[in-house]
Image 1 (cartoon, rainbow, N blue to C red):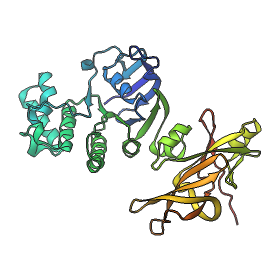
Image 2 (cartoon, one colour; image 1 turned 180 degrees about the vertical axis):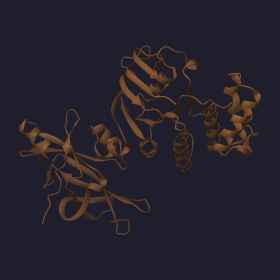
Image 3 (tube, rainbow, N blue to C red; image 1 turned 90 degrees about the horizontal axis):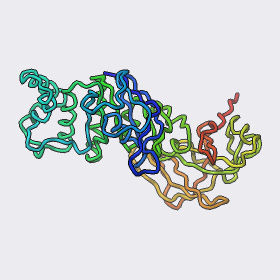
Image 4 (cartoon, one colour; image 1 turned 60 degrees about the vertical axis):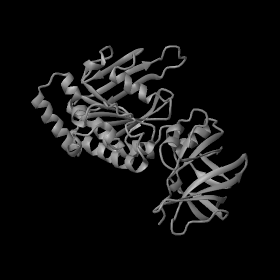
Length: 369
């Protein structure tokens, strides 16, 4: 196990105008499961490959267990990588695939067999040790790839979108298995995914990247409750946060289709400094049907069993505004129905319209009685 650290790490591909990873500052604690998440081109896989030694670091430093490994060859970093395409040898059986790195390290045959057997038991592969990869399901192949990483007993596991080739149901099962296995082994793990649901359910902490730059790093709850900027707010959460740009009134409030939204002290200070507009962020659960409020028409209802979401359209100054609201699945509205919506006090955010930085939360509900 080992601490991993990026210090002002930059990676620039030959011929590129912009860095793929730009001045990355990120620490991963010993035994932690850190997820790197972001859209395509955000730099998450490049950062992982720089850690593995598969990409040249243009500037900055990469540390593993306190050692500067920036210029070390991949084989000298003592990390194990799990790829999305499994990278199994088709002509070897499961046992030989798992034990291959030990054979290359010239580990004795008896010790190799013992470590392969222990990994197979841990991953429920014991009955499959004589099979070839072509005889396995996608989930079984991924477990074999993980077994090959486990037997090495590395300082860190590096996983690059390992579940992206699996179907939706198997992905859910496998992400639970990986998280449970990592918790059991307590090996430092850096896990890359583009799927924010996967990131939120697996990561002890999650680092959100965009255009090569770290946007925010924190626990899943921190990212959800206190997004640092508009990008994180819109990227984290499913369905996505509703983001509405509206005039900022004196005193730190905004008006959304005639409904006054109190934004809090930070917004009042911004208004006093001359900010004319603000982006109000409201998660679907931060809106509720009301007797009067933002006048909308239901366009679509998404039934998800225990949850339901209504996509509503409001005609506001400046054009159409789409709002997603969580509704009672047993009394869900129907498409075409009129629905008035109000924000719940204290359950939203205000963002700067130009920089995207979070200004502050909505004002909390006033206590009565």
